[in-house]
Length: 90
Image 1 (cartoon, one colour):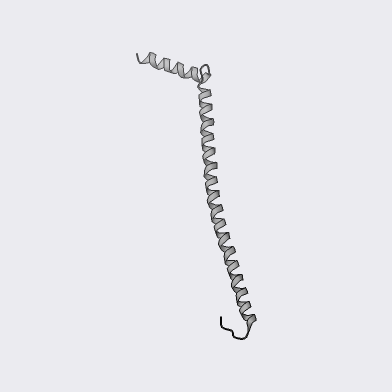
Image 2 (cartoon, one colour):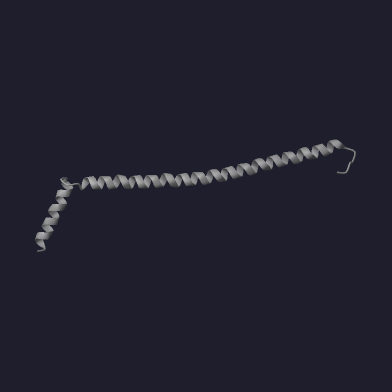
């Protein structure tokens, strides 16, 4: 480095350079962290929605199976309708 007779100016320039580098580093780390957080939250939201859909499907399947179980009113109505349909179309 050229010695211009003012060593404190060199130190001030280094301090400004280090300060700018630290600020840039914090900005880059923050940007990467936000991007990563956004990706994780997106994946998490897909998992939550998928779990809700699958859980709802299991719930509805169970309700439908329970409603059509032998001996229930709905099952007896279905059997009576099928019997009536077979009798009409002999």
